[in-house]
Amino acid sequence: MELNVSELFMLRKIYMGGMMCPRLLAPGAMSKKPATQPTLHKVIMVGSGGVGKSALTLQFMYDEFVEDYEPTKADSYRKKVVLDGEEVQIDILDTAGQEDYAAIRDNYFRSGEGFLCVFSITEPESFDATQEFREQILRVKNDENIPFLLVGNKSDLGDKRRVPLDACRERAAAWRVPYVETSAKTRENVDKVFFDLMREIRSRKSDDSRATNGDVKGKRRRRMKCAIL
Image (cartoon, rainbow, N blue to C red; front, top):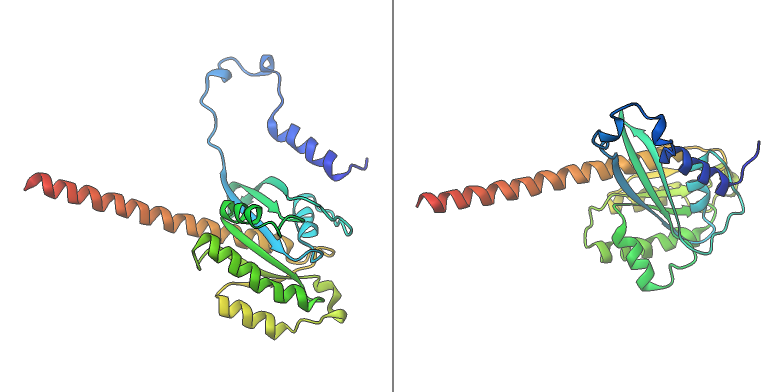
């Protein structure tokens, strides 16, 4: 049975939503506390048109290569995955068609916890554009250490390569971010870029949580000292 992407997504929503008749539940089950929701990691896909952002996203979501998919608006996807033994959710915003509108673009960037900045190794212009995307993200987030991966897509077209590997690595080193080459067609490193970015997001959240807890404890100690005096 062949299903299109919309049908697959709807089936998954029905399955994950647990559309089960309450009468079929065990006695007392309705009174139980709801299970803790998995941690949600928000990923934003950025890059020039035609570099394969959507193809990478759909390959990760549905294990399908969609060559000619050209969305005219941003699409959002959510999926439960197991990250290093822990069940988490990844929310992917695939930006497309509206990045030229500054207000919309900035809202996308504000909502993101991590970014996959994608270019095509066959298109030098798309590689040049990553510099502007990086600058826009840093301006909005005001944080040079935001979780971020530079992704060179279409590695299956090595014979048509026009962006030197050394240039890609040099840019990533200058930004102090990982560089990974992918192929949405062959699925090379598709899972890797999403899981690596989620690990960076998780690490950042952990660091932020420790810093916040440290500030709270410090304030408590200061209040206690004042009370003693």
